[in-house]
Image 1 (cartoon, helix red, strand yellow):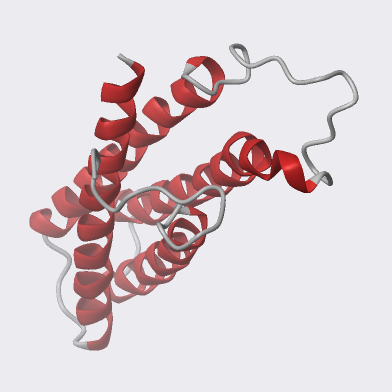
Image 2 (image 1 turned 135 degrees about the vertical axis):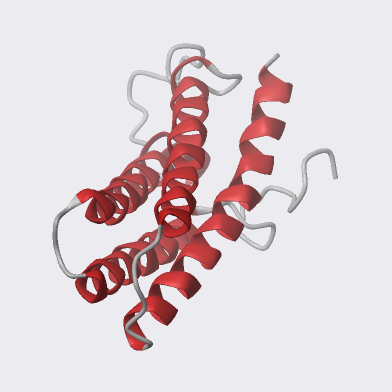
Length: 159
């Protein structure tokens, strides 16, 4: 089950990245071209937020109860995951990755919340663009890319 959840979490990463890139493009286009905010924009932002929240829930389960979860792994009493290089894996997956992703999903949620506010369409697009763009930067920084030492994961599950 743990392997399946890791694979699902990995696949959802790509869905979030695609939806986020489309959301960024549409919000930038709407902002610069002074377009009218439509129901399709709101739905796209909703799907982006939902994909983020589902992925976050799967990730939090893995951090706590997964194969290398906080409640499944017993580190030595003197282990300092924040400073000791031999615990870099745990620092990344227990602290850096979850905290950064929680911030990113919060930014996506705030950006999506703009769709419900009674403000000018241009301002909706502008705010959404910046929240989505910053969220994308956080996500890209916290993904365990294959080139990252110790914490790297394959681009697609099972590879």
